[in-house]
Image (cartoon, rainbow, N blue to C red; front, side, top):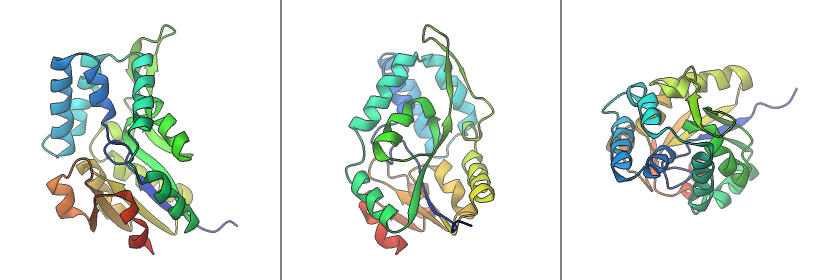
Length: 215
């Protein structure tokens, strides 16, 4: 029987990468749409409004094409957190398995995961028609609503029975996992949210600060 894994679960947007994917999709729609989407995203990540109150609304405003999503995938890689590659190498050497758990879109995140050598991505699927036009998203996926990330952490624990599980993220949706993980690390390089700083066991400004916390 294989040994129980040690899992380190990363948020994607404003954590592994500098950008918020949904905001970049909004930016492609022009300044008015971008401002509207960015405001909704920040209010949700700060815990002022629920994730579910804005999730579908933002996508209906933007109606992203497959090419827009592919472009955001390239942006994720171009804006990768500068210590991410080195940090992940150190974590793997210490026996940790990294995963991505995101309220963003699997289609856009997959290129960054491949770049970082992360096999498993838990995120929302977007759907397109044959011409690449938007036709919806997986409305049943847990991270489309508040409490979705803790739900997925519980599912990971049931599936993989990890020895330890650590969560790293910048948003209130990440902080919601604190009661389900062995350690919650808040991340503030790109967005230092006060609720996350106050609630985190540790709060870091660079991913390379994480390995010593897990020794």
